[in-house]
Every structure is written in C-alpha cells, then in structure tokens.
Image (tube, rainbow, N blue to C red; front, side):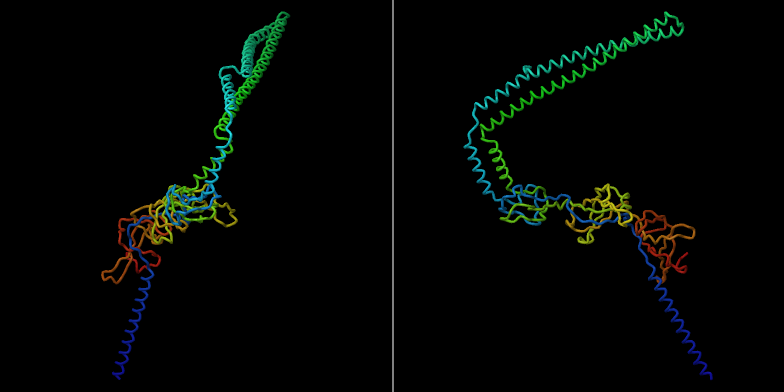
Length: 475
C-alpha cells in the first residue's frame, strides 16, 4: 500500500515538473516573440533633410544638329564616329567639291570676257552725283531754296499774327474793368448818364472780344500755313537727298560693271566661293558625337551629325501643384539613377515654369504639374543622356543631429514627448525599456529630429513603442 502511494506521488511530481517546464517554455517563446516584434534603432548623428521627390530623364543642356549648308554635294570623307569627343570647329566630314570647283573656273572665265562699262558712263554718273551733292550743300538747289523761303515767310506771318493776338488779349482786361465799373455805377445810380456809359462800355468790351477772336483765327491760320510750308520743305529736301542717293547707286553700279562685269556674274561667283569655304563641315559646339547619319559618297542633305555636351547635363522634371510653392530656384538637389547604383550626385533647381505644363479641370482627377529643370553640378558623374533619374529637392537640411523613426516618439502620461531606450539586465538576458524625455525638431516623411540631456549616441531606441507592455517598461 505504501509502495503504491509512493509511485502515485512520484508520478504527480513528474507531472508537475513537466507542466512547469512546458509553462516556462511557452513563456520563453512568448517573451522571444515579443522581443522579436519590438524593433530598435541605434542612435547616431545623421544629416536630416526635408525633401520632395521627383523623377526625370537626363539630357544635355547644349545640343546641336549639324546640317550641310550645301546639300547638293556628296560626302567625300567622314572623320568622326559615335562616341567621339569633338571641340567646336573640329572637322566632322568633307564634301566632294569637284563640280563646284569647275563652276568657279567657268564663272571666272565669263567675268574676264565680259565687256567693262565705258569710262564715259562712269564719268557722267560721277558728275551728276558730284553736282547734286555740291548744289545741296552750298544752297544752290532751286527747289529746296524756294521751299525754304516759303517756310521763312510763313514763320514771319506767324510771329506777326501772334503779336496781334497778344495785343488783342491785353485789351480784354482793360475793357472788362471798364465794363465792371460802368455796371457798378449804373447799379448805384441808374440815371441816363450812367446807362449811356454802361452801353458804351459794353460796346467797347464786345469790340475787344471780337478783335481778339479775329486775331486768334488769324494766328491759327498762320500756324497752319507755316506747318504746311514746313511739310513741303521736308518733302522737297527728302526728294533732293533721294536724287543724290539715286545718283550714288547709279554711279556705284556703273563702277562695279566697269571693273567686274555684270552684277549677277559677280554675285554668282561670290556664292560659289562661299560654298567652297563651307565644304568642310565643322562642329558648332564642343561635346560628344551621339549620332552619325552622314554616309561616305551619299547625299549631304538632312541631319548629318548630332552632338551633345555631356559635361553640361540637365534633367527635366515636373512638380505637383501642392509642392510647387514649397520649392524655389537655387535649392540643392540629390540625384540618383538605377543605372549608376548607389552613387549620389549634386544638382541645383534652376527653373520652375510659371504656368502648368498641362492645365486640367479638377473634375478630371489628374494632377496639375509644373515643369522644372535641374542642373547637374557634380563635375564627374556616371550619368548618361537618356538615363532615368530620381531626385530629392532639399527643402531644408540639418547636420550632425540625432533622428529616430517618426513613430518612435511617444507621449508620456504627463503630456511630454518621450522615446524608449533599451536597457539590458546585468546578465544580458533580460531587456527592459526606459522612457527618456526629448525635444523634437525637423520632421521628414520617415524621421524626426530629437534631442535631450539623457539622449546619447549608441543607445537603442524602440521604433514601435506601441508594442511595449507595462512589464517591459523600466520606471
């Protein structure tokens, strides 16, 4: 009986130990799961930036399509290929000028065989020109002199009329004063004598007014006549100058004809020589040859080469309407591309369009965007024309600060902002978390600047404090 009792007790002890072990195992797994769910971040000084992210395509700020000025000549030789770097003025290709040189030789022969203009014609034209210039400069042009006399006579008439008008205007105040006095005398004593005096004063004032009106009309007519004679003088003088210009052009034409043959032959020869000088197609800008369309022996029409300056890169992008008032030209930009790995290049926002790129109605649901341009300012980059780029426009930036994930900042029961830092037990087997008061600063989409006297680099801050339990928080 006792033996059976011992066996039962032993079984109970074993069962109890097993239950305790299972509970400890479950609690341990639960604790590990909780610690795994809690995420921490090691504090260190960082540079924190508030940015707007945009995308765009890399292109050159300096691009040139090269055409031939003589599209009738075939390509003789090509000196560059795709990818070659050229300086402005470098020869890209040369045209075959055999036919052009033959035309120049024929034109020279025709001009040398042309009859020169006779010396008599040149002398006659020279005399006409010299006489016209001399007569005008020395006051011997009869038409101009007559028109000038008319202007002077009209000016004299204007002066006389203005003097008469001034005299008539001077008489008005005296007549008005006399009339006012006669009216006052009559009002005081309306007898026959004062009435006669009033009538006489009124008549005198009327005569003075009429005289002034007549003088004003005469002065206006004289001024109009003066303006007409001056206009006629201007017309006559311009006609005399035009005659001189006509004589000059006639003289010049006769001199050209006498020395070089007909004008058309000379112009044609000049154009042929200019074409010969343009037979070497040169680079208008320095840069990299991106396209070569010229074919040896082929026509020189259309685009022959495309050159782009790969050292002066731009990225066109768009900024949404709710961000456009937050940015301004001159802001720094960080540039990255999937094609260049983790490299970050520097840039500047250099322009923002004043009007939307594609205005749309609010009902359409489409964003209104403004075109902007970013200059790549890093001197050496792996960016290439046509690459897609990701850019962060820097709105504000602080350096050497401590930042934590936005959700890491909590609020204490007292209403102050806090973060929780991990504290290991002495045996490093248990982790508890202590609240530290902080002051917040700059915020970005994911991080927020924090500072506090108890906050130090190297601390582990909880990123998701909402998962902490009361048992895990160290008071």
